[in-house]
Length: 77
Image 1 (cartoon, rainbow, N blue to C red):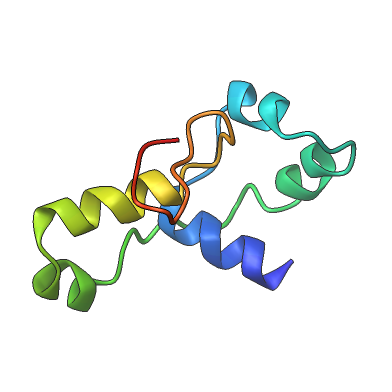
Image 2: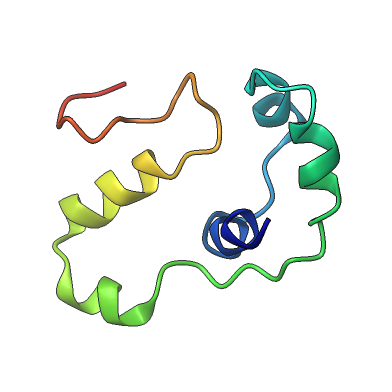
């Protein structure tokens, strides 16, 4: 749960569409228990050091919706 809370602090709370796209019966309950996690976004040290393309890639890799999330292999989806 702590890892999920840390992810939500960066990404913000997922939409109902994103939650529905997760293939898990437990995910909706777990996520709703963390609705009050404040969103802080990406660390400023990362934003200063990484090129814009790198920041964009990180955001796509952290997309909550598995149908939109980019993998770590470099290409899209």
